[in-house]
Image 1 (cartoon, helix red, strand yellow):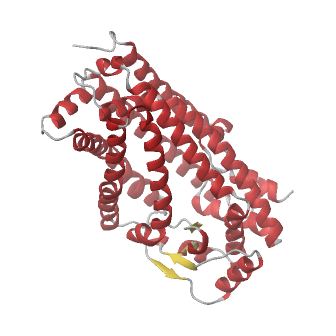
Image 2: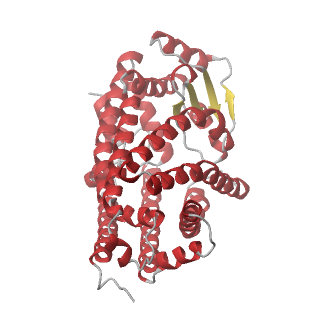
Length: 414
């Protein structure tokens, strides 16, 4: 029986998993210690001491919840590996007598299902326990189950074909497999960007055109002044699941549409809602969207090239007791090896994303002409969501795609 004591690859993979877990846990513990008892002066008008104390309790519960979930998933993965789980699952799918592509899809599907089962109790507790206890959750059990089933259906309908294509490339196209897979994933990503607003997002939420009135007129007036084309402005029934507000753009070019959460419309005055829209317009006008898309595509290419580099190593399969090397097992095992690279790329991408947020804030302040209104909207959104106002710097550096709201407010009010 092959064990971790006999194979360097096993030791490396275990070390990477444990190292990632320890690093993330240290960051979360530091983040727990960054909570404050006093309300920051920028928020004294919106937070009374009692509600601020409630926000701190909520955030602590979320962090502890996430730590427990990460601990359970990491322990389960290490146990699965140590007990030869990959080997047994590989034998099971091979025993069905299908070809390599279908066997690979079954292998991936089984791993995804196992992970989903482990995560399900945590999702239930987060949604109906923590979010419900603090007044955020509006999701019913029926909606929760429907969302799970729809997500599973989409993973089969959309995920299975692209996974099969990638498996085919790595089986048949030799050293250029990573390049073919890269092109396929890029095309898939662009197609989904067009299809999602019209076909995928309506599976989970209802969208209806924003009715004529003060808010619609103010948004149209602003976007026309910025020569910014919109196909439609929609209201989305986000309140079916949560009380938290937001807004976003979906689609590209003349098919671009603005979506406002109904919770944003209900809780914010017109000028604040328009300032949030101005921030989102800034992302487009400043070219952030194509830049972020290009970064995502480039990082995918780097990861696929790294993956192919390690894929042909026989020691990797031996370390996990795999008798017959296959592309689908190799892709799974190699994913553990390039996890540090993935973390490094995400840290770099988050840093650029945070800079883009400041630039979009500045654009909104400049074009809308009311920096204090956007600052007020950001503060109100943060209070409504009980956001962490003083996160630890390391947490921000590693995981935040947006700057802490208090830093954005201070930048706007300079």
